[in-house]
Structure formats: structure tokens, C-alpha cells
Length: 260
Image (cartoon, rainbow, N blue to C red; front, side):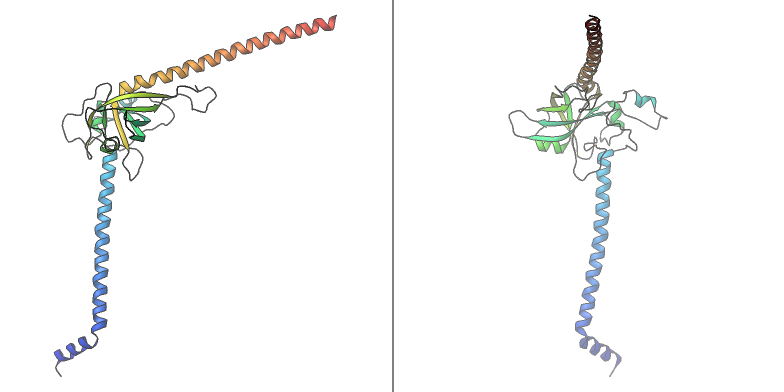
């Protein structure tokens, strides 16, 4: 028996075990290859989502219950290579008149021209927004069925210097309604369409408006809160003085009765 014949007989005799080993090796190779491909795909997807949410942003200074001055961005600028942009972010709910389409948990973001230095713009000129105009991202456009030139409404919680449950906070007129016109629906991978400082798998609903315009709309609420707080303090002082005078008067009467 030759060597070749011996090898052939061995393979045919143990054919089932050899086939099982071969199939196991093929399956294992396929699983490992697929895992590597999926891992690279997931990593790339997460990187793309991070770029869509943050653009060129590397750091953010956030104060949830207080407000910064808009010129603070210029005050803390380090050099020409570092750019800061002020934004005013409010929570809102949106709807289209005469339809049942609604969207909750909308980010209403007031921006100025410096904001576009952080975005992944595909054009040289950044979008220009007028008062009452808004940029919306594709997810919100699909949710409300909006396109450029359409009108929609937002209901926002007015910003306040006091918490909602504080004793001095105003218990009425806590929301404001804004009517906006869609200037443009942003691209999926540009203009920070999915801008958000919170991680998440689902893109947010974003509405971008001029910062100065949004400041004017929200300033009324802070002014009312301040006036209400001052009025409360005035009433408290007046009530205290009146109470003291009443107590002195009663005390005087009591002494008079005792003397009689």
C-alpha cells in the first residue's frame, strides 16, 4: 500500500469527523469575521452620531437653572484657535394648526453666527435666520410633516429665575406660544442637525432660531417673575407694618382696660 493510498483510506474512513471539523472551522471563521465587521460598523455608527450631535464641540459649560450673559463667550475666549458660542436652550412642544401632528421634548435653541463655527457645514456661507424663522432637523420635519415655508407653533415653558415650586414663583402664565416659519430643513449630516449635549440612540427634535429674538421672547417671563417677587416683598413688608400697628393698638387698649 502506497502512502497516498493510506491517506485516502484514512480520509474516507473518518470522513464524518473530518467534515464536522471542517464545518466547525468554517462557522467559527464566519462568526469571528462577522463580529469584527459588526464591531467596526457599530464603532463607525457611534462616531457618526457623535459628530452629528457635537460637530467640532469639545467642551460645554451648562447651567440648568441659571442663565449666563451672552457676551461671556467672548470673555472666556483663550486664543484665535478657540471659539465659544452662546446658546439659549429651552424645552418645547410643537404642533401644526388644524392637524393632529404633535411633537414633544423639542429642543428650542437660540443661536448666533458664532454657533456655525462649531457645525459641520458643507457650504461656505452659514444659514441666515430672520426673526420668526427657524431651522428644523429632518426628524422633526418628518414628525410634523413640515417643509420650507410652512408654519408651525411651539409651546415653551418660560424661563424663570425661580423654580416652579418656589413660594415666590408666579403660578399663572407659565407658558408662551410662538409661531414660526420653516426657513430650511437641515441636512442629516450637516449644520448640527442633531445637536444635543446628551447621549442617545434616537436623534432629538431640534429647532434653531435667532438668539436675540428668543431672548426678547423669554425676557418678558423673567421680568414678570422679578416684578412678582418685588411685589411679594412689598406686600410682606406692608403686612408686617400693619400687623405691628394693630398689635400696638390692641396692647394700648388692653392697658387702658386694666387701668380702669
